[in-house]
Image (cartoon, rainbow, N blue to C red):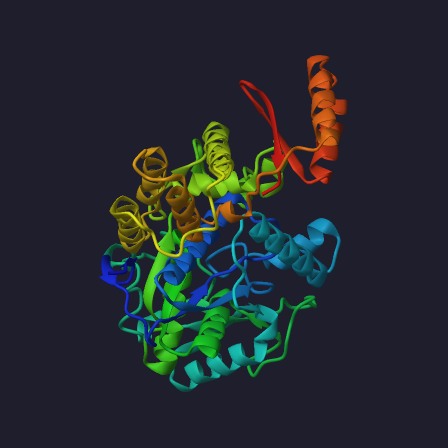
Length: 468
């Protein structure tokens, strides 16, 4: 039985999709003003594993993800500068150029982490008309009011507002959480449409019945989710910080406009944190995928690291833990290569033949069905590898089967002889390292990577292997 922890009900629930063996998923995408850091990417890894778990259980997926390219302000209180406008000033580019560049950077990171792209990408700037139409519905039903800087949703008009957060978060006092925009009736009220500043023309602004401006951040997801998946749809995902503001505001708009809950299941991934606290762009303490690559770490080692902690538990990041994950991943790759040395090994079995192997597959399914328990599934995999009662053929079959969920690209591993040219480059790099010629050593490493190989420094010496 497939179960997920549903935030809105505060319990694990059996997953029952609206349409048999079909699941509609909406996941909050990036605000494309800067690179996604590994804390952001942990959430996207969790969502990718969720999709893989559903597919493993026979579901067809329709996945929608937004690209926020307008309307996300620097303060959750609907104050401050638009993050895209701020990014444009920082880099002396247009907001359109900023959005395009960081959207492409984000998609590149997804590929590096073997995260499957959604079926449909939607940009906030592509749904301005639809967002205005939603605000019109809310206006007709008496849920909005106007103040100097924009049009706001009156949360006091909706009795169910805040049910995603729980009782504690509902009791917010004015000024207790954040500085409040002048004129807001309630601290939880949020902007649906922001007016362009007086005597200033924004790069992104549109005409509306209420004045020239741009949509608030919380409206785009409502439109994109419902337009593509209907209401209600099956699953809405995001990071845990969306539980207090963004997702309650989405739920409120959908419920006020259509009288229905937006999605039946709300799943949230916990933060990745540093030893000194939360990773955040505003704090300037972020780590991005390029930082991993510069340290000669396979991005899939970060994916492996995420598998070791349940998605609803905090993951404390350190370079030491990441190096440990890289070592474990390399051992897994080496195990696959060693299995391939068995001449009797054929393609993966369509049906496992022994009860011992079938039991591992059954337990794996039980773990992933129990709220995506990847740490137990990962531990089970290593236990299976060490089990001498299971043949190499069945180990190989099980590893590739498990990797349909793990997403570590085990199926891509081939028994490949390292070319003499690459071996010579690796020897040359090691010579430079011994002579402490770090610049030359790094240039040689780059040349090795250009040839489609990675090189890792281990206690027993450098190891070279094809890029997975």
